Image 1 (tube, rainbow, N blue to C red):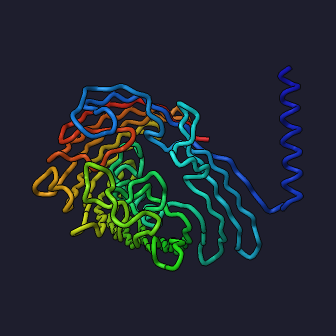
Image 2 (cartoon, helix red, strand yellow):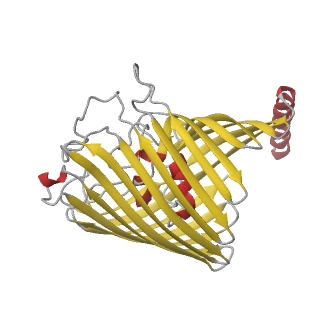
Image 3 (cartoon, rainbow, N blue to C red):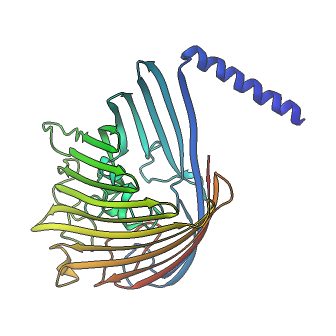
Length: 387
């Protein structure tokens, strides 16, 4: 029985290989992705709709905690002369329910691009991570891991993904309708992008332009980003972003910038960074400023320990409704241990503390609903499998 199944599988692979060869002998297509699930216990959790007095602790299964769950299809065709054509389609999913991971029902919500590459670099067009996010990741405190609770996502530029919060967050760090260039010249990596707003009667409404630069020499890396996004026309002018913050509009002109660096030598990795997200909201700016530092030590190829500290501050004219000084702050600390069972499968354990000062509530995440001005402790244990 097993032999018959194996022969059937081999036959299918042979047929697909023949068809692929007929379409283009120089084309390679790969399927890849990850499945990540964890059990998390957290104190001072509030009941929906996320605002109010904490009702107590909660234990739940969370998805994509250490590594985003995704299924991707990547293809590259060799055009000769150092040129290639490429595509990348990535869908996000929730393994504990089997559903898509976005309320908008987008299939390839994590990436959907096609492009060309050559000796001068690569150009990809479509829905993709912003140039700012890709530039920030190498100097992020935890190398952009722990996406379910990592505060840095609120400081990464982006803003056209439905279901993400475009004022108090970086809107999932992606742009729709984006043309992005990446060039690598020795230790220098350059990124530039333009995202079309596609608003009738205006070339600038809802558009975005961004740049990012990384430079690596030996164990040192430095980087900086700048992104400017114009307010869109799809949402009526300046409606409340959500009822408890009546002065913050859903859409506004936004400016993001960041800079930071990392040191990688032997088993050590050190990273520091600073980022600002500013929106031109009613009566004045809404500004989020964040800084972070992280240390990782690899005890062996299989076992590592990482620690990180983040401080994120929000100031806005909208907040005097609740806080007279119009300011909020969160201090977050993380300690993460990872053990690789193989090249593709890892176990991890994480503990964290989030101190929400002055009634802070702005940086909430779906997997970490917080209360107003409280201290939250969390512990998570999970598994990641890459394929």
